[in-house]
Every structure is written in structure tokens, then in C-alpha cells.
Image (cartoon, rainbow, N blue to C red; front, top):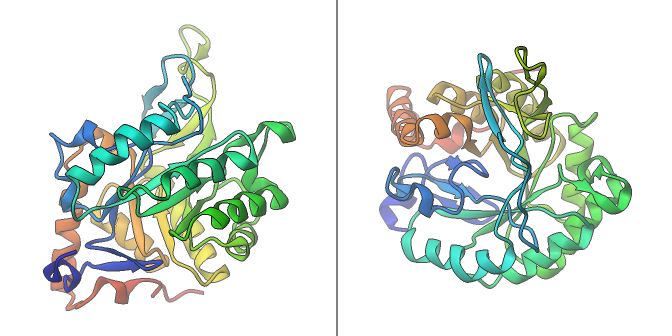
Amino acid sequence: MSSAASTSPLAITLAGVSFQNPVLLAAGTAAYGRELAGVIVLDALGGLVTKAVSPLPRAGWDAPRVADFPGGMINAVGLANPGLEVVREVELPWLAGHVERARVIVNVVGDAVEDYATVVRALDPIPGAHAFELNVSCPNVRAGGVEFGADPCALAEVVQGARAVSSRPLIVKLSPTLPDLGRTASIAVDAGADAISVINTIPGLVIDVERRRPVLGFGTGGVSGPGLVPVGVLATHRVRRAVNVPVIGVGGIATANDALQYLIAGASLVAIGTAALRDPRLPERIVKELGEWCERHGVRALSEVVGTLEWP
């Protein structure tokens, strides 16, 4: 990273990785980067989280996979991706050759505990990856479909397995439906996680009343959009109080005000999803507006704002 970027008031360091600003594209928003390269200046952002990567290709769920509703968006993509080999041989090398300043976090998924280590081990040597985000909201098929994040033993095994094959930062992405986010985050950190990402989408169902059927091909889906900001901000605050590692705030962010709420609650970075799908240039504007906010408030380093919530 250039010296100018490192001295920017928006610069943030997370788990030893320097980000020129705190704004990321959330997992799935930018696929593997090239899909948005002609629309958004990726190097204007702090970084991007890639589309999911699993050991084998995944076709995903039946269409339609995404639908809008008045409160936001619902999706059931099914973690569709081309698989580890294509990402290793094609997608990450493209990112390494086209993205210089933005950091790349690879989202990792699996059907069994060992799948996560398989992906991390294979991608760890690739120059295009700066960190890994372990999506533990996936169902563990060997445990009857229970989410990895909801099973303390499975969660610890996933993180320990990935930690054993990589020295790169490991970020664990947790579901907002967990009964005790703080405790779950602590389990992940004790197992070797360097940061926690909250939140994932919230399960929901939208019905087409004319057909009396779900609007999505799969039926249920993950709800995202503006209504998730208070949920994600509270989750960020709770996790930040429970563990002594950085937090990435995700959920409903569409304005600089939203991003600042997450930062004040304790997030070091923020990731934008649904809003960026609707307006791909929005993340760049939020970066600009965060800089203007710092200037107006005499803030020399945005990192000074992180975790300054005066409550409780």
C-alpha cells in the first residue's frame, strides 16, 4: 500500500492487514471482482469479500433466486460457485493482476468440517487472497443439517482446521439467529479466529399472493436491506464486548450514517451488500462521505471512532 494510503484518516488495520478505508463489498456482491470491474473502481474501496468458494462446484437453488419487497430483498442463491479449482486457477489470479490497493477476503463454505480446511489450504499460497471469511451459517450435512455456528464443537473444529493450514487472518461470519452471539464469537476466537463478521442475512419467507406460492424458487431465503441496520449494529456491539478481536459489521448499510453506526458500535470495517447491488457506485460515495465526516468533526483517524459508543 502506498504511503499516502497508509496515512489517510480512513486507513484501518485489521488482524495485521492494512485497508485504505473501512468499506468492503460483502460476500456475493461483487462475485470475484471482474463482474464489477467496468462499473466500480474496486481500488477505491477498502476491499471486497468474494463470492463463496466450496471444494466442488455448486449449482445453487432453482430460480428465481432474488426478489425485492418493500422492506428490502430476499435471496436464496444456494451458495452457487464454480468450485475451488476454478477460483484458484482463474478468479484469484485475475484479482491479483487487476486489484492493487483493495484487499481481498475469500468467503469459504462447506458441507462438512474438513471442507473449510480443504479450501483454505489450497488458496493460502495464492497472492490474490489477503484473508479468509469462514461462513459457518452453512448446514453441516454430517450432523443432520445443523449450522456449524450453532454447534460449538463443529464451530471450533472448523476454525481449528483452517488455522492449522494457514497463517492468514481468519474471519468467522456468524448468523444473527444464534441465541448467544457473544459466546459463539468467543468459541471462534478461542479456536483461532482473528476477527468476527456480523451479521449474515435473517431467514424469511415472501409469498406471491396471486399464486399462493413463495416468490423464490427455493421457498425461504435470507432477508437483507435497510431494516437490518439496527440488528447488525446491536450484534456488533455485543460481539465487540465479548471478544478482544476486530469486528466487521454487515447488514443493511446504505449510507455513511449507517456505516458510522457500525463503527461507533465497535466495527473496524463495514461491508455493503444489498445497497451495492442496487447502486454499484454507492460504496465509493460512502468512502467519500466518511472522509467528509472526519473533516467536519476534526477526526484525524477514523480508527479513533471505533467502539466509542457511550452505552451501557
